[in-house]
Image 1: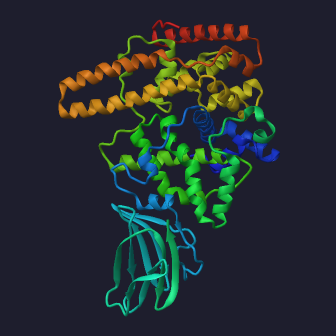
Image 2: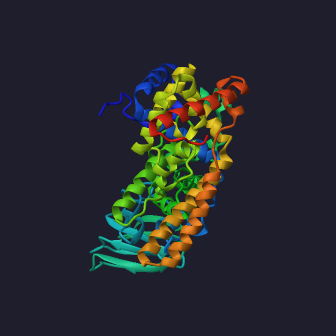
Image 3: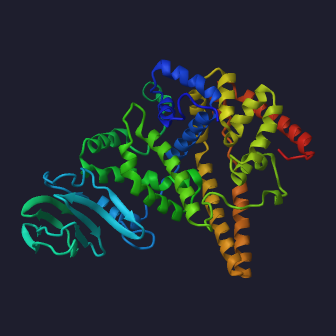
Amino acid sequence: MKSCPFEYNWEYIVMYHDGVMSPDLEKRFEEHLVTCQTCMEMLLNLQNDLVAMSSMKLHTVPEELVAGKSRQGERHAFFQFVHEMLDMVSGSFGTGCFENVPAPAVRGKEKVSYVASALGVEVRLVYEERDLFNIEFTKVRGRSVELQKDGQSIEKRRDMKNDSFLVEELPKGTYSISIDEMHAMTFTVK
Amino acid sequence: MLSRGNPEFDMKNPISDIKIKECMRSYQSGDIAVFSSIVRLLSLYMYNFPRIVFAADPDCCSEFYEYMLRRLRKVLNSYRETDAKFTTWFTVVLRSRYINFVRERKSKSEQHIDSFVFSLDYSDDNRQSLYSLIAERKDFLRSDHPLYDELVERIVSHLNQKHRIFFHLYFLDSLRPEDVVFLAVNLGRSMRNVLHGIGRLKETVVKRYEKKNESLGKLNQYYRELISAQQRDDTWALLRIRKRRSAVIDEYRRIKIHPSYEGMATFLKIPLGTVSTGVSRMKGAVRNILEELYHEKLPL
């Protein structure tokens, strides 16, 4: 395969299309387009797609998708949290917790929303039906964990014998988690 | 700069560039709450992309929409702001992701029916015209099909320079990358100028594109129904679907997408009469070539 000096990089295609390259680079890229069919094809596709997308009527996104329901009628935890933003209201999340933007994870059919870790404990927020969600704590053997909702303690476990435990059917609200009596994280599910 | 200094090429932008770039700046500086605003700004565009560009059905659009949502954070993290429009960048991303999405779906299900390939036995059509042979064949065989490429190549290699220019502008959808280069070189223009000019010509026939696209969507649907009826061995359903599909094919064939002569005259900066004569002569030349190649007379 003939190599492309611009490495078929679409950033160049985008910049050339919108006319925002420096004159020198634009001249080189224009010369390149004469011989590179792949880049030229990308450019042609882009132009066609943009014309079509800018001139044709856009249909409304179906309500069930916006509401976070999948096509099979299941609610996607991830999408639910995208729309009902998991809003972290405290900055002290412990090491590595949420890493600023919580990553959605999907394991097979199981729908996992956000996975966080704080003070060595892993916390998974899993969306359930009827606007409720679960919190699953793992790596808690020998630890003490307290879960508070809107300032009230709703679950307190000391010196855990098991490695994990689950708190189910939690409504929306502001939650705080303490590990070994140290504040680990606070978040709001709106 | 074309998009800033040359507004004549600006297209209607379905996503506000100022708004989305503001949101992207906030998002990339750590404001995760703005993510939902970004989703709202991009939703319509993401959902409609497969339908408009690949004639995909609503189910496929919904699946692709969810597919994109699951990957959106990663996609957005790779964005680097430049003076280019966000929509331009995002459109390239969507095309690439859609192709991956189709491949993944294909590999997951052996019985998967490609969302944009519908089966119509083109050779059965006994009402072929120059238009159906060149413009529509693309939809039947897809533009990257070797048979289609071969047909276009055989025609254009026999046309003189002037006729070839008219051919490319008249049969806009048959345009290949090398034809853009040909137009740029022979018209003494930049590639971008040619591409934007072609974009302008396409915009003038957008309503017909929409209609044609709708028909394509229906044909896809009927194809799936046919397969399903065949699997069920349901003769009555097969007859009913074939009848409906035949009506849609007729409707589809009635919609011809050619840019106006006025549009071509503006683009080429020549008088309208010259375009009219040029197109007519080009058609005659193409017909002669086809007769020579296939020994068959075709209506213009």
